[in-house]
Image (tube, rainbow, N blue to C red; front, side, top):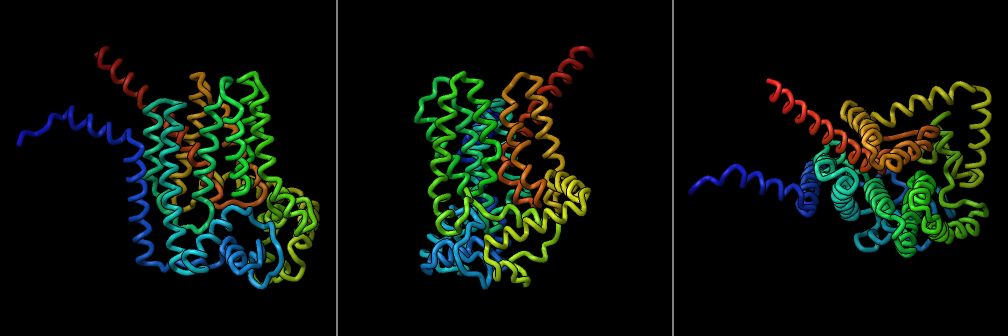
Length: 400
C-alpha cells in the first residue's frame, strides 16, 4: 500500500485539530482516563462537603439549610445553583452515595471538556486560529486541569459558565439586539447564583461595552436583567435570615479564617457557628476581624501579599507550570495591547476577579473560573512568539 504523502497527513492532522468535536472528545477521554485511575486507587466520597449537605437537606424536605454538621436552620453560606443541582442528582442516584459522587465527577468531566471548546472559540475570535488552537488544546491536556473534575464542587461548572458569559458578552456590538443583551444578563445572573465572585468583572465589562458601542442601553439592560435574576434569591434571604444578603452570607467569616485563624470554621469542633446561628456567627467574626486588624495593622498587608503570590502560582504541586501560565497570560495582555487588539476586557477579568481572594484566602480551585481567560491569553502569547520566531529564522536564512 502506498504511503500517503506528508502533506496529506498534515492536512488531516490540521483538520482534526480544528474540529471542536475532536477537541471535546480528547479532553473528555483524557479526563475520564485520569478519573478512572483515581477511582481505582481512591474510593470517591462526599466527605466534608457543604454543597452536598445542603442538597441532602433539600431532598429531605428541610429546604436550603444546614451546610455544616449539627447545624439547623436556613443558610446563605453558599449560592443556590450547585446545591440545587446536587439535590436533583441525589433524587436520581441516592443521597450522598458513591453512585451520586461518581455521577458528579462525570458531570465535572463534561463541564471541563466543554470549556475547552469555548476556550478554542474565544481564542479564535479574538486572536486568530493559531491562538485559539493553542489555548483550546492546552486546556484539553493540561495536567492541573485534567484532575480538577475530581473535586466535588462547582469549580468546573463555574469555569464553563464564566467562559460562556464572557465569550457571548464580548461578541456584542452596536448592532446587537436588546434580547441579545438580555440573554447575556440571564447568563451572568446564573453565574452569580452559582458563584457570586464571577460577577467581579461584570461592571467593568458593561462600561467598556457602553463606551465601544456608544449605546449604553444594551449594557444597562444586561446589568438590569442580571440584578432581576438575583432578586428572588435576595428576597428569600431577607425572609429566611432577616438580613439583606444579595447572594451569600459568608464574606466576613471567610476573611476572618484567612487572616486570623481557621480554628472557628464550622467544619471543625468549635461549634460556635452551631450555637450562634449563621447571621450572629458572621456578625461575631466581623467584629473579631476588625479588632484583630486594628491591633495588627501590618498583618493584613503581609497576608494579602502572600495570597497574591499564591493565587498566581497554585496549585503548589504544579507551581512552576502555574507561574509560567500566569506569566504567559499577562504577556498576552501586553502583546495584545501593543498590537492594538481587544485586550482591556480580558485584562479586567484577570485584575478584578481575584481581589476578593486576595483579602480572604485562596486555593487553586478559586482561580480555576478565570483560567479559560488565562489560557486564551497564553495561547495568543505563544502563537505570537512562534510567528516572530519563524520570521526571525526566515530573515536569518535570507541574510545567510
